[in-house]
Length: 124
Image (tube, rainbow, N blue to C red):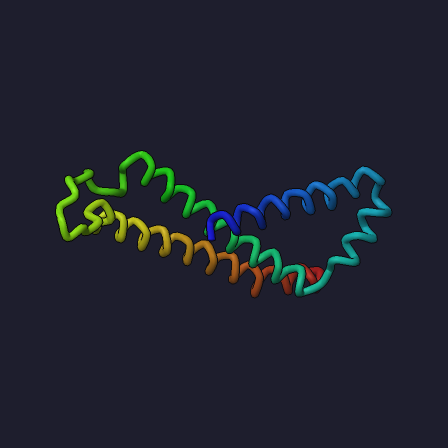
């Protein structure tokens, strides 16, 4: 999922650079572009993009900390039957914490989509 979200973000980067470059043509092309994308589905896509960014960023933090050895236990000598001791309670709690933070970010994005976007579309 981390790789897939990274590919989606790279694709979004190219789309973002292209759409932002429309401003180089002046106000008329930019205003016509804004009129074409004024659609509730586009705003839902932005909310989905927030979810992808939140997932990718928080999972990236988890991977960095796991790579540094912060969220995993000490390596143990493998004794039969093999049980992964490095994936202990620390990493489970850390993943749960990141899921909670991600949920809070998604709730904030959903509230913005449900409250502020309709107001902006009405001109208020």
